[in-house]
Length: 344
Image (cartoon, rainbow, N blue to C red):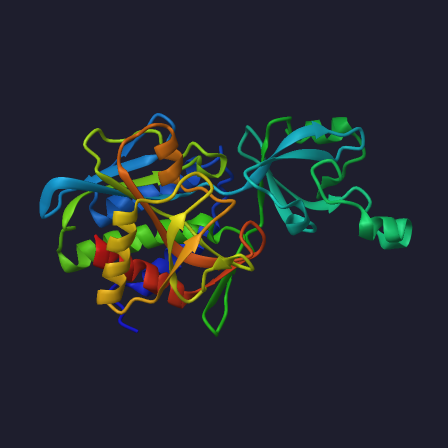
């Protein structure tokens, strides 16, 4: 496989970003780290009022301007209620699969910047006590709760720790890279793509090259709830979002290939952009699939439906078990960044 960029750098950044909690609405720490990396690589950027990063890179020909994006926010939860016994009822932020986070270790992030450990468990978890009811009970926000790892017997005990309604809750990412090249973690969506964008920027720096066109780079922070990119440059011609592809029964994605999206829940992607991405892949021996997503939207299509005027596309590494314990492969990472380089 032809590798044109620093793969180890992308993997290192992926691991670091995955270790920084950033449920949607609580992304400042992760975004600050991304901003430090922009500066280290020599790229100036601005913060939007919502806390997103936007940068502009001069191209060889600036008469046409593209934008790429990836999002730093992840799914997570917010404390909805402190129960009389001191445990926490949650409400999700983003598309949480409650069965997929059963038994997961979590952190509650207080307004005083304390991180309090706990675990998400069903309200009836023990089969020794509840028998089949524990096995068969639906898993949803009302049947799951947080058991804090503190000496707690009452609501007042929990409040004394500084926990309040509205505090953010992050899930343990449990990141593993296997000897066979698989990357497993909670939040490959979309921190791997953020690391891939940084890998592309490092490629530009290391090789002292410019993109073919003017290029905006956007790191968003509200994608998981649908309003990630809301600041669009007036002169933008094309927007390619980096987000995960899907692997499953009704998807063609392959963890070892890059996915090029043809359509998602909101709209078809621009056929001219899709053809351009496919041509770049084929001319550079990049392995890809073309996919249609029925329950999915990207930052690009979210901006399109707001009424902004540009061509749009979407690419990314295909991921097994999205919004659960996710998995992809290093080969898919490589093919995605190679396509970025070939297309941009």
